[in-house]
Length: 281
Image (cartoon, rainbow, N blue to C red; front, side, top):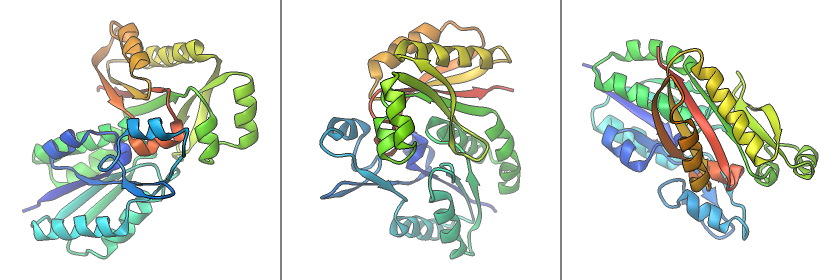
């Protein structure tokens, strides 16, 4: 009989409570300051990151090999036979490859590692869907075959208040970042088919960028019913207002809010506002 475990990295934006309730194993990314290293989501919160950004912008890195090994060993000890891992885009992090390589040293575990080519709550939605399939008694093979279709139903978009932190983290070029700030440009960003950031559109000023997000959502909703999550990083009050402005749009099946994980907050900086959208077939 199959006993299937689900692993997800901390870029998924799911709360510790949700992960514990669903028995999803968490691989925390690492956040390193000059004097100390933290386990993302476990040892440090997003608000703590934002409150300290003016003093120091920390570095982020892959989950530690030790924690990865601990999780896999414990799964074997607990009698798991199969493992599904859902990861942040390989175009943005080496986590996918690290988990894949670690699992090669555990031949007792039949495994499937899925590169979501996305991040934040859209990655979290993938994990929730897989968790539902596991809990409903679907086989490993059935779940693995369903995962690519689930991914096609999910999209994510975000806008940020400043390009400073994407620039510092090397996510955009310094010259383009500086020009963008001079012109008060607020890009709306998503990820492409390779799982790499790209600019969907640009807006002049914050109000216009939020309007662009709203129009993107309306376009998605015009195609059919969707579940919607408002994403926020250091922008709680704006996120509440944004939720209020879209809550009555036709075809929204459910509407929730999600906080960006600490590791992702390092690169986005305070003022991140976004959407995760899941089409309901």
